[in-house]
Image (cartoon, rainbow, N blue to C red; front, top):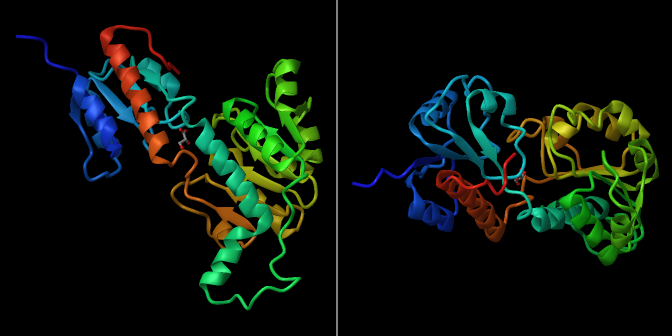
Amino acid sequence: MSDPRPLIIVTRRVPEPVGRALAESFDVRLNPDNHRFSPPEMRRALSEADGMMCTLFDPLGPDVLLPGPHRCRILANFGVGVDHVSLPAARAAGLLVTNTPGVLTDCTADLTIALILMTLRGLGSGERRLRAGQWTGWTPTDQLGRRVTGRTLGIVGFGRIGRAVAHRATRGFGMPVLAWSRTRPEQELLEGFGVTWCDTLDRLLAESDVVSLHVPGSAETANLMDAERLTRMKPGSVLINTARGSLVDEDALVRSLDTGHLGGAGLDVFVNEPNLSPALRAREDVVVLPHLGSATFETRVAMGMKAVENLRSFFRGEALPDPV
Ligand code: DGY
């Protein structure tokens, strides 16, 4: 008799092709009702499965990843960000972690551009007004937003997604683009993207009409945009965040909007997802979306397939394509 196939527990409902691909190689326990695992359920899953496919909505801290050997040996994250996983706890529990870089770059960059357009042009409030029957017709002075073309975009974090946003902004909208990251890329690469490098984040903040965040969530980037940094942004400028809610001090953001220093914000991610703070909810100058960056069928299938490939490689004893 051949060895039993590894058991993979999948913490949330996945697109059907991903479930099928998993079933070709593994015994699979899906989550057909799509409920969120409680910590006890997660601990049980770790003791029953050989591998797990998890998502950014599964907090995997030291309370769940208990030290010592588990049956589970790999967490294949369905997503690129792993700020929900305590990597030291995973290591102590003998678990490898993988993610899904690359395949969500274009969709996240597209959504970033959508948020820039929505925020500067007031598209959300315009749509709400129309649906509410409050539109009284075209006039020269009604519902005026701000021009996008030609405004300076500052990209914080010049990795895959930051670069894809720069490409769209320079080519599509004639936006001068500034960029800042922890490490400076080669000049040739910056020139290829038509981007001007800023040696400091403060300089980028002071010179950009739109600041867009593209750094991962981590202890190092928590509250990157705190009250002080928000103050350094150009008066009337807008903040766009499609990365992680933890990068922005939401209370400080609301205060900055209240004083009129910032001219708006476009947010796809929040500190306390899925909850939206009442102060943000109430604002007409803030566009909010429910973490839709990677939310297309094609991209979610590609993300799932990457997670499947990582699981397959692990159980075949091969090098992991996307180790974290
Ligand atoms: C990720 O993969 O981390 C994204 O936030 C999902 O949209």
